[in-house]
Image 1 (tube, helix red, strand yellow):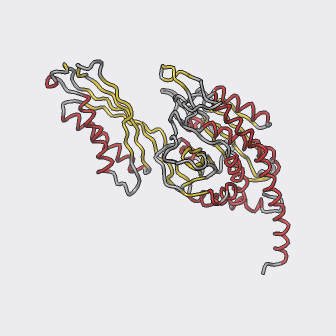
Image 2 (spheres, one colour):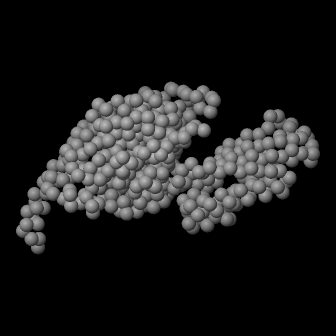
Image 3 (cartoon, helix red, strand yellow):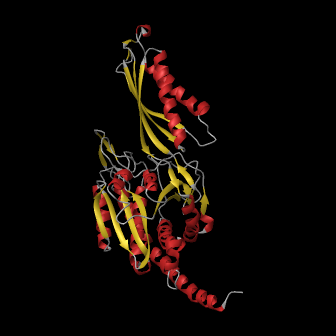
Length: 441
């Protein structure tokens, strides 16, 4: 039996919590249509990495209208807004990425993108083929709701609208590393950071997450093979870099299947681009190929790099050619702090419904959100955007012309973000007592 004093405190506290939760539910519901409208407007006018000029201007104007402290031009085109809540608490950061991709949109939508831009010296179509438009809209909606409830917000909230998640065009800097370099995680120092990604193959409204390593590191490699040019009818008079390259590609797959300890985590080595030759009857002198490596373990990553260099150079040497291998790290493993995940999953369940929240497997996709985890405990999760009843095996994947999401439940993302902000302070020991009085959410 509970002591009478404690019972009275709980009775006084419970209605206040219920009222605060009701206010949050109402605020999120009131912003739902606006979130969809913003998402579609942004979708219709996408911009490539480090070129998000109109997008960032739209974001900054809205945040300023809310009366937030707004900083523009962070990490080239990034926007950061700060909300100081009415209660004591930590500094929580929420992040959305803003860039689109050089992809043609095939879906016949009223808000279909018809825009184009210059990419690597060519005019290309541009599309939000990864759902970053929905991330922007969700975070804008979150800013609206939390600003309206400012007096109840514990601590400080940083809204980070990041450019160039897909990678800045060479030789430019960009993305999360540049924003971090320019101080986005400091002044004030962030205690925890949360991010989400829409997923076209996850049922609408569902949230998926994984503690620890969740998404792969992403390394990009370039290999230049140099042989000896000759007539296509007399290959014995030359050294064919195309044949050498094909042997290197096959050799890379034996690294995955025979040399990597796959019980520790998957490895992917993909050659995505090959450039060589000018005519069908000339064996060229040089070939350049480019690709990506995905791993989930830093030690394994180093081993794979060493084996790739050894494989490429020795195969080339066996044919009398040479191979120059350059590997560049683009993103780290996206790692969800296990303690933070354990602490905050109940809050996600409260917002999205326990039946809609599931732990998932790791994914070989990559995210530069990973860099924020070097500065503060981080938690990154996925929000479903697949239409109800659709087959995950048949819907279009991200980065494709037919990519599509159902945006009717983006408000789930808004509610989850808000719930995380309110609950983090209550659950962290150093802030729990400060916010344990009746009236705290």
